[in-house]
Length: 415
Image (cartoon, rainbow, N blue to C red; front, side, top):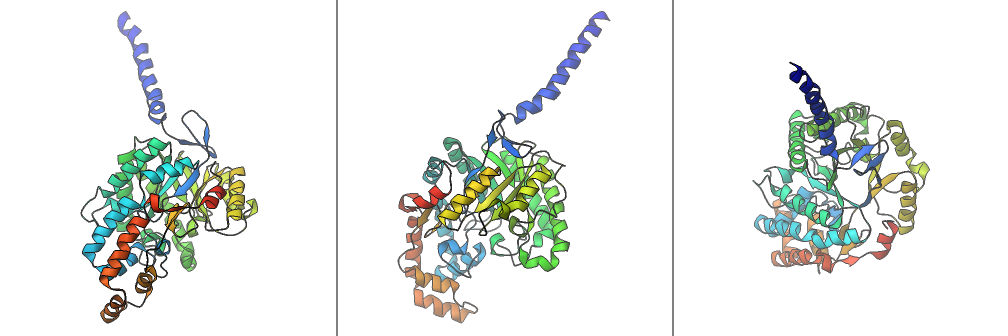
């Protein structure tokens, strides 16, 4: 009996040490939230500075010089009418291989960035047809896994941003939707949203290169202000469901949530204390480059005692951008500029328009409202000429063929 009693305290102490030590060990390699800061495992602060890989996994029309043909499925439909669906499957595969490569990631790191934000379409993690490949639920992982390894080699962190959610969370071209934020009202869309995030979180739960998961981009556009009082509480509830779903499979990574109305309104987000590794993300284009212009973001940061991060900023003068970087840094708000690469300028690296691109643009943005008009417009461009332009575009987007925008990069204050 005496021997048994001597072992019990030792056993109890061992169990206690396992309970206390194991979570610490599990979290030791991850960035995490500490008050208004993002901190490394050793407790030092990280102020996010970097860029967005927009247009790679969620094409946007304006980055190709298009006008009203703005969303991924609009672009794909127009180009399928011009060169055929078989050719577009080949094009999209090559586009994804060429648009961002290891050279791009090396260049971004060399400029002084510490973080990359990756906008992606949920369909890349389903069997839905998207950008030329269907029936492959692993395609998204194949691209992101490569990006993770490139970031690891360069010492960069990666934020995964679901830019295009099931049903659409914005109701505009940004989310590749059908013109309404159906995600907020349709349970089937929400279930798919949660399912995709759980798959992603389970896949990357042990990956320290991942800074965090951004649940959705720019939810609930201002076009729906007449329904805002009804829709905003639905967004708040869905955020909580999303965080809790991720926590079922990943208890270590940061989760990011944005304000409504293009990531600008935070008043209707009423819950955040249910998760201690949650932070906020905002966006800003235009306006004054002063603390007063973003006071509502600063107030949200102070009220919640959570980090605030500017996920998108840019498309302004270099002087404005440089001043705004100073404003953000002085208020402990990290940032990633939008975008890293696009046609022409207003980015870190720009790619050239193929010869004759205006003809292709005229077709894409023109009247294609019936089959007769499609045939007539296509004849003006010519299928073979259009295919040549798309092949040229695939070469132009390669890093070695892009033009580095030195003054733009300097305005980002990365170094």
